[in-house]
Image (cartoon, rainbow, N blue to C red; front, top):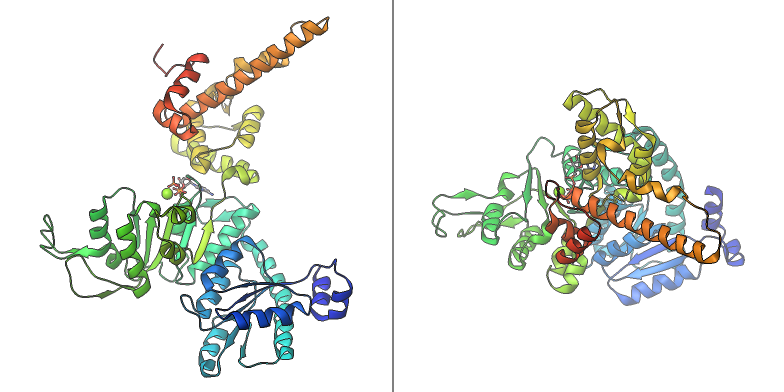
Length: 489
Ligand SMILES: Nc1ncnc2c1ncn2[C@@H]1O[C@H](COP(=O)(O)OP(=O)(O)OP(=O)(O)O)[C@@H](O)[C@H]1O
Ligand SMILES: [Mg+2]
């Protein structure tokens, strides 16, 4: 594979002859159409796959959807500079070389770029030959550094990372992203369903950063009213509003030198979003009622389980703030998409709760294990953890059995596997098939409803909401299936 790549990069004749070969994919970032198109033409002429875009923000978005082998970016661009693009790439995909294009006047910045990990830089104007030489050099360096990184990965990430358990490929990617972003000051946006470990990730970023001895300040943006949130974040001056009896230092200032974690950031009102954007752009804040700008030095990490991009299309979240936050995205995969982590998580939580609760439990019955391994976990790791805790509390023997957990209704599954009578004609066969099908459907529905209730502490309103069913319809299903709230009959 490495050899094939090497040949693709160096032997353009072979490339041209063999269209079936995998070609290196390049991304060009430049705000000037003429330059973008010029570069594209030169590189496509040598059979590279070339994608272009006009801003750094856009580049980061494209990089999340496609893999690239090399990025070429202009240094001076409005909004997000080439250096910022470089830093993001170093964090998002550290293996990908970045070449910067600079004007004559900015060679100093180019030197700074090299210090920040750029593979190379080209000063304008340049010849197509020089460009191609630099591109090929950067691509060949890449293969070597990739091999090295791969070796390191295998050694350091065997079981998990900090508080994280799980070594699936999906999680390894997350651990690497955390490590890289911890070394930078770029804003991070952590996304993922509820219970996937977003807060754990934010803390791990802080713990791995040079800021680890300074404060980690977490703010739950969903729990505070708009004005309260603003005064919490920015602070206020005594007498600036009714109730401001004392001057209050904002969390931006309290987190100075450290990490500020804005949890559930989608809940911030549009007017506070504007203030937050300004603070991030200027790295300065004004306390409410104050006149002086206060410089802030924080690493901002935000998290949400909503899709901020969709929200920005709908007008409920500012697009410019979304771009600012999304400089380094970290997406935590749902547990159902990394099933191989389930057994190790079960072992981890079993150990944790047997010690905590003081019970000796040897393991999990095979049918329970197979249920747990195939379950969809809408509440992700948190849900699995709660299930194991409950199982340890309820277990009557030294093995966790379904009878302790009631994960599924055992009486339901029996008739499905037992054929009571063999049909003797078509009519009977059809009738029995229909019966079995109805029964299977009912078992499924019953398990679904019970489980939704279980997850929500038998709160019907919340269970209906979570499953996306109207409350009266959910109640109708419960009635039809003979399920009543625990304790009621
Ligand atoms: N990979 C993991 N290994 C071990 N424990 C985990 C893992 N992921 C999550 N947890 C645990 O699951 C619980 C939920 O994690 P966390 O609070 O970080 O999730 P979250 O994504 O912030 O959820 P929410 O969106 O509901 O706030 C915590 O107790 C955390 O310790
Ligand atoms: Mg959380």
